[in-house]
Picture 1 (cartoon, rainbow, N blue to C red):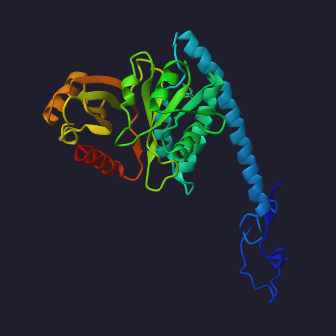
Picture 2 (picture 1 turned 90 degrees about the horizontal axis):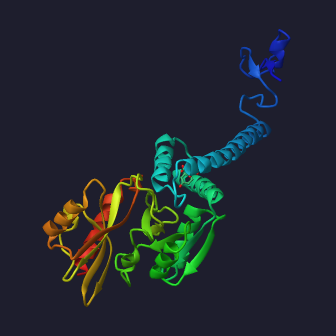
Picture 3 (picture 1 turned 45 degrees about the horizontal axis):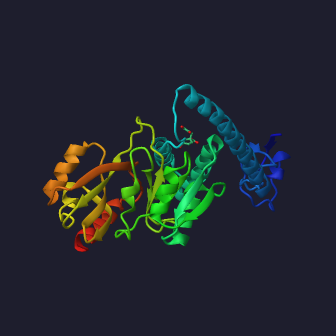
Length: 324
Ligand SMILES: O=C(O)C(=O)C[C@]1(C(=O)O)C=C[C@@H](O)C=C1
């Protein structure tokens, strides 16, 4: 109920006493349930507002979950087979969040909340488990897994990266999480195939300094639908000799490399705007034709919230060329 409040008692009775030190104010709306007489909202009122907002959020989340039933039916009707993950759509939603965000609430809180929502909605479509690369910094990888796949998703630790790839290739919906290290102990990406397991995402998605869950990692999954548009393509490239020194100059990022007595294996990231033939030519321009160059997946370009992506790009590429 709303009341018309007169800010000084005396004013209401048409007199103003000397002890009434407060400035005389004109009528204004005053709701004892929502405001202190001084004008600010009361704690109880603010909590009521939070309860109302929480109820709205909860209702909306339940409605979102109901929409997922429709999404499942629509996918079935359109004949969409295969895994339920749509990394391009997820990236698009994250972009919208970043564009819309205008609050003291950290954007990473928003990212994490939406990851929890999206991953739960994915689980409603088809339950899945995330397999972690057991040879990685497990604490760091666990943080990333929980941040991106929430607490309702099952996690399992596999022996190493190759095990993760093998398990994911044999399962319709499971995902793998492999930590990205400049130097790899094994060229695990050789196990990625056209119809088996592929790279489908790169995390962290929002890049900013000192963010939690910041261990760089790749998400491995079954092939995404052909119409999926991801900004970056990832290639398995092999050279009998050394890694060409000028890959970075050609706009090619070395995500990881493995050196053996046979030569060097590298996992390369290149703009998806370039056809495979152009990527081959760029490798040649960078120093040497690769013996093998095949696409093993792709990912949506991470969002560089603070303009730091280039530095990281430079560092990785630098390490890769210095290390050989
Ligand atoms: O849009 C879809 O295709 C969905 O399956 C819905 C949804 C979501 O919850 O928003 C869930 C999983 C996908 O990876 C992307 C989005």
